[in-house]
Amino acid sequence: MSDKKKLEILKKTLKKSKKEAEKAVEAAQKATEKVKNALATAEKAETMAQAAKKDLKKTLRALSEAKAEQAAKKKVSKNTTKKEAKKGTKNKSSKKK
Image 1 (cartoon, helix red, strand yellow):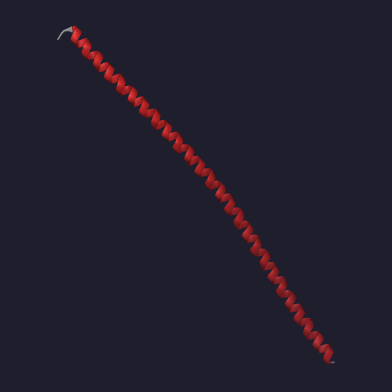
Image 2 (cartoon, rainbow, N blue to C red):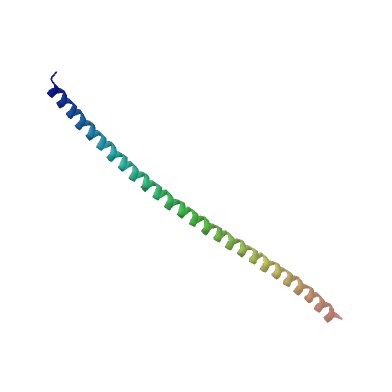
């Protein structure tokens, strides 16, 4: 094989390799972009999850406070009813005398 022929074959191989390398670089860039987008999406989801967790804690705290307040009102109401019942029996007994 002549040197000219060998040089031609090498040039073709080099061009082919260059194109393949460019394609590989382009594919790597696209993959990097996809990874960046996926990471951004995951970060947004994490932020939303943290916000939801905070909201849930606030809601649970408010619910707990409402239950405690309701229980206190119920206890006060119960005590008031008992006091009124005692007063009623005292009044009835004093009226009878």
